[in-house]
Amino acid sequence: MATGKINVSVENIFPLIKKFLYSDHEIFLRELVSNGTDATLKLKHLISIGEAKVEYGNPIIEVKVDKEGKKIHIIDQGLGMTADEVEKYINQVAFSGAEEFLDKYKDSAKDSGIIGHFGLGFYSAFMVAEKVEIITKSYKDEPAAHWTCDGSPEFTLEPADKTSRGTEIILHIAEDSLEFLEDSKISGLLNKYNKFMPIPIKFGTRTETLPKPEDAPEDYVNETVETDNIINNPNPAWTKQPSELSDEDYKSFYRELYPMQFEEPLFNIHLNVDYPFNLTGILYFPKLGNDMQIQKDKIQLYQNQVYVTDNVEGIVPEFLTMLKGVIDSPDIPLNVSRSGLQADGAVKKISNYITRKVADKLKALFNENRADFEAKWNDIKIVLEYGMLSEDKFYEKAGAFVLYPTVDDKYFTLDELKENLKENQTDKDGKLVVLYAGNKDAQHSYIEAAKEKGYEVLLLDSPIISHLIQKIEGDNSDLTFVRVDSDHVDNLIKKEENAISKLSDDEKAALKTSLEAYIPKAYTVQLEAMDSQAAPFIITQPEFMRRMKEMSQTGGGGMFGMGNMPEMYNLVVNTNSDLASNILNTEDKTHQEHLVKQALDLAKLSQNLLKGEALTAFVKRSFEMIK
Ligand code: ADP
Image (cartoon, rainbow, N blue to C red; front, top):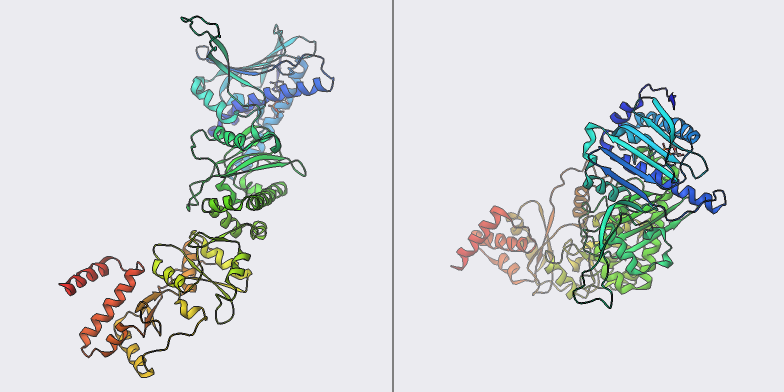
């Protein structure tokens, strides 16, 4: 038997491993199963190039829990190691790897959030074990080796009688880690980290009922067999070519990823690139509401089919973190902090590629089946609108597929919208006026008024729409967006001549004076000669002020410091209405005040502005009047 001292500069590396990675002890299983997988894939490769002259067979990796003996076994049928190789790879490579890892980790630990805690490898075993054994037999014709280490730098290495090829790692679980001896714990971990690893992983057995033979007698009792319980799918959809997969394959993979999710995804995007970096994956568009927060952290990041994390911040462009699915790339550096990621050129390239690919796919979907795309628009728009705001590359491509729906469910691209509005909807400066509503119910009367005039009204109801409109106007000098309740349509769109005013200029001045005497300062009175049947009082809110206010509320760049902006409204009074004449001609000042206040309250009521005490007073006053 050989004994020795592992050559490390840190006298005792294990307490350090435990301390630094305290929260992540569970990754030991991922690391050891990964090693078994690597050993198996290496053997496959050696056989394929004629380097190893052995039978590959159907190798699996087995995880066994021995609760009584307080042991976990991880057994592979890979290439194994000779005693010399154990000396070299475990005592030297693995240790130096662990040391290097700790060095790096110490610096970046302050910078919270190391991506994947990858690369600790074999020594992560000591996070949960007080003693580790390796029993291994190489595919080469050499005796098996048995290595033992109790966590100090001393180890023993002796021959073993193992005859089958491969490696068995035995973990003697430490007292503070006994939770890992629970089957449910281990199967939970295998399901989290190893669900899509490329070599079948066995954990326990399950009883399978064999089908009844055709000639079975009536009293036939079905036979059962014990079979290996394989916990993973070694060939997940993202590792295949898009041409091999049907719509149903994509959907069933989605169910495999999210077994608790009953809603089907709307679209999928298969990512597949091998130059200048390696990346595969499938992204799904789930049905999204207007809430931008709830959906995050649903994309899983893998490296060579090994699960790393579900926090892909910094890797996937932010607007796409609302999607679901899988990304697999060995080219994403993992032992760096999140802030380190941003500075990484490869990561930037990957992020840009994903943006471009998503834009291209959306364009293709739009072109292939526009009706379907329109039907799904409301469930995906939040991602696309956010993408236009946050990623210039996406914005450039978005014109080809981003839609602007009307209140009547017609859908235009921006170019189509411009074409459609031409001539019909321009302001006094000749700009196209895009009328839009933010809420069909709240702005019902304004929408109706605009439609009656034959104008197209869009329905733009995302929480970030003000920001987007601002950006679109900035890039399209021929357009101006105006919400239907922002200004009176007749005033806005110079199409037909306004109606002739019934009132003389002197009468108008007198009316204005009377109105201003009774209404609050926040209102600017505007007199307009409209159809006598149109509403006598209408409240509008200037587009610019309202938009700025909304943008400061939804956190727009550069909007800070605007603080609480004052409410500002216009009160548009129809001088041709009977009510206007009535107010003008009433001698009794008290009655005149009543008329103005009641009319203002009604106008407020129609725009949802009458609340609390004012509403109570209004209702009370109205009852008095009809009594
Ligand atoms: P890494 O896998 O990143 O190289 P590890 O510390 O996990 O680092 O392992 C060190 C080395 O030990 C591996 O490179 C490999 O040569 C060898 N090794 C570890 N586990 C096995 C195994 N199950 N079968 C064969 N060789 C192994």
